[in-house]
Amino acid sequence: MIDFRYHIVSLISVFLALAVGIALGAGPLKETIGDTLTGQVAQLRTEKDALRGELDTANGSLKDAQAFLSAASPQLVGGTLPGRRVALVLLGQTDQTITDAITAQLKAAGASVSAQVQVTDTWTSSGESTFRQKLAGTLTTYLDPAPADNATVETQLAEALAQSLTGANPSAPNTLSESAGIVLQLLVKGKLVTTTADVTAPADAIVVLAGPISTSSDPLATPDPTEVTTAEMDIARAAQARSEGAVIVGGSVKQGLVTDILADSTVSSRLTTVSDGHEVVGQISVPLALNARIGGVNGHYGTGADLTPIPTTVKLEPVDRTPVPTGSTGATTPSSTGATAPSSPGAAG
Image (tube, rainbow, N blue to C red; front, side, top):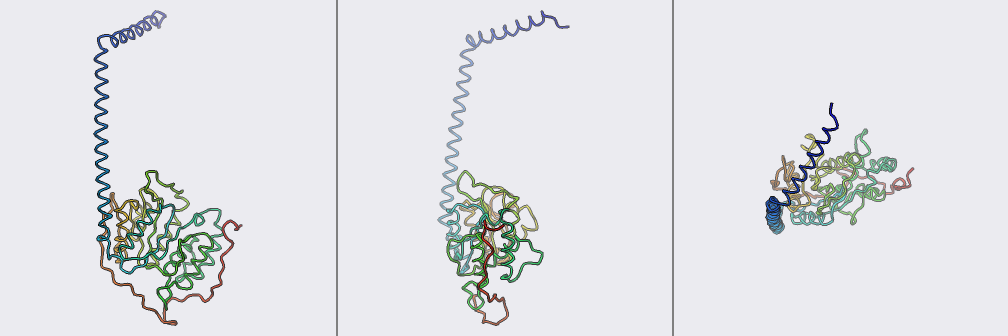
């Protein structure tokens, strides 16, 4: 049994050790300890300065490389999308500077941008599900081909969006078909999408910018994937199915539509993606990837495992815009132009 004397001895030992430490630290070891700490601080400061210098050098080299790529991009992408009309579909948030940069690369490739469409929160808002269901029922009467009878509302809306951007008037291929114009008008009136300008010409191909894509070091807010993944995947599938080819562009955030596509071997075998859309190299890859996809080559481009750094381009045939006389075999458009959308979002019960 431990008695009181044991505790006394233990306390005395502690105080003796403390006293010896203070004496040595203030006496013979004072200079040694001080010199050691001073040397370590100096060494850490030197290492910090060296690392800062290396980082500055690396950043400078990166800026030089980006400047070179920007200057060389007309030669890299020039002529890869001759005469193609491309529609931009924006999902989530994307910096306007990035949208403008990708648009510039598409134009440098010989393409024109026929539409820029932003999909709004109404597309996936749980409070607007009844409204979307009613609107989808109206839109499907104008779609050719029509979605399957068992298609979900998200699939119906995705088909409507893709066809509204690519549907051409057979007798005047440089203009939207009557049905495509009606569908796009209903989507805009229903506040499911917004457009930057009137859409008058049908697109040959579609580029989907799947946000968040930002040039800032602070990434844009990432929406709840459980609310948007299915709807966005349907839009990506419809974009590919109803056009010559589609490319899905993602940013630096390692989640979202592009990540989901890459994670599914079946989907990834059918859809083309470009990662790092916030970087110059990713923006240059967009028209190159679209060229390859139109040419029948599917791929996934960017930096990282299982990604191809740069797409390999193919020679595309000229776009055939030969008018089809009225009454010839081909897609027809509904004769009615007086369709109205269900009650606008917010008024739906």
